[in-house]
Image (spheres, helix red, strand yellow):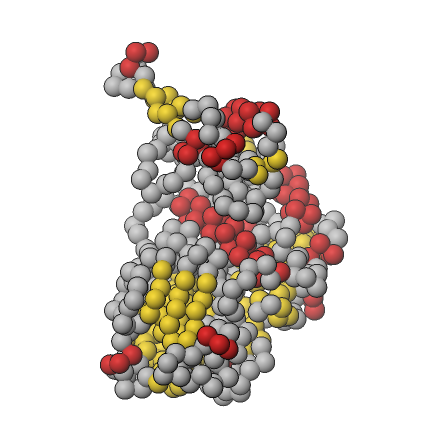
Length: 491
């Protein structure tokens, strides 16, 4: 698997450099984190564990996308993304921009894992919900359709890239089945700069999506900052940077995206490699308190086929490491904390490490964790970058919550393991072949046809207490096989 270095929770300044058309301007644009008061996602919910849960789920989904893109196993047009849904999507940072003349404000998701800037446009064959008005190119005095002879008209095969008027078409297929189809055009973009001013950029290529499905969310589209020739970052200069401060402070308003040749580069530098339109870094080792862990640097290397390696990605919140790098780090953390803190279960913790305590007071003095990159650059992870505080315990810990927004039944380990063992025993006796499927949470996946292999599977029952505590008041919910198994499709 590839490893991912998180692009925000621990990076103060990140700079990506790519070869592109020369520019002499600097455009400093505000970045809006999804969980800040400036975001349409913002809620006053004080549950501190929800951002962590979302971060884990979206990052695991994002990893599957990046692996597919790095290895070329997902056959789709040049610009693809991982799963994008309201709660678990890769939306982390958003950028407000206005498009056209007169300007129409749009909210886009910043994405270093794709290269195209696109928004929804009228007329709509099919459009998803968004927080801003839809852009109508026919009402803009500066909109121009892109000709099929343009060097940027490369998103479809030659025989299918032109409409009857000889304008350039584009179509993006997303990893979870989302599709965006429309026409390429050029327009004037207006950005709100970090000093409360405005910056206008003329003749920028973008995708006008008229037939879009599956992305019911707040943003109007995606601002791709990958290394492709059509990318906004590539067309505006040879480099871009994004600088991120405190994400736990929901009122922090100084996150910035800087575009253009004059983008600020600060701190230590490390080589950046572009492979399959992803940004790869060379991670050489990990230290804790200045002590290098026993990790073979080869575990971070990328192969020629695209497996392995370390990717920096704006759509991934947490650091994901290959097992051979994670285990030594996990062992060192346990050595430092076990005996001083009580371990607790957290079903959403991919590390399996969760302790009872107060992060700000109990972990004072915890040694700095360092990521060591080629060229001598060291990224230090302080306390808030390495740990997440799930908030104080409440009397609501445990129990069963009925939630119409959840598709799966979630059980604590004490309740889940006996069920898993029984299911595994029954399926193994049927001779089904067990396989690993991506990053499935239940860790039970078999090859077979649901209609044939599990049509007569015993009914699973959830037993509840009725109106009273007496035995005769108990109720049960029966789960037939279609509710107990999830069909992944052909594989």
